[in-house]
Image 1: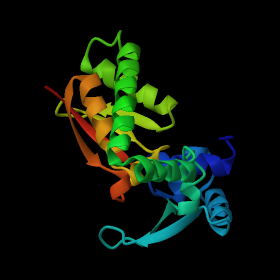
Image 2: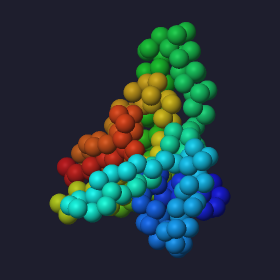
Image 3: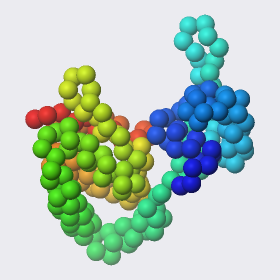
Image 4: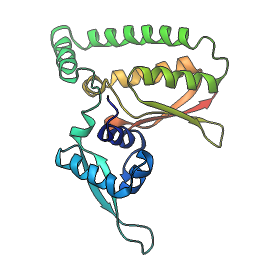
Length: 207
């Protein structure tokens, strides 16, 4: 995605969630008014929309800018419609067991590849960092950090296989099991795009 002001705004909201125009201006190095003008233009194109939220205390209501469904579609979708249709045809022609076989094969291949790439990561912190880098390369816009209690967060701001996951929850279950195996840690999914969250988030705890 080219780094035009509009694309930078799309990436910012996609990565960090709903934003104030002033915060977007700060991030882009422009004035809040210039950011509002850009946002208004993007709203006319159907990419973003503002939602008014009450401020804490007696402050004035604030306008937070969100991505619309059209805005989210600016990010790679992994050939969503084709994928969903192929999965439906597979189950229809060969039965659910065939799809389970495909998911299991994909899980085994992914696990082998991830373990190979994480071969030099000798502790959990470095494995989480390396996994986040791999997932970003694969289109998941991943981030990670360590919490005060010593656990780690792995966050994916985009799901390029969302259509496949929506058609078959087995893909999400498979990815969670792959993360647990490759990181050698306990992992809980705390946010899930398919359940309406804006991202998928995983809490990683040492065993």
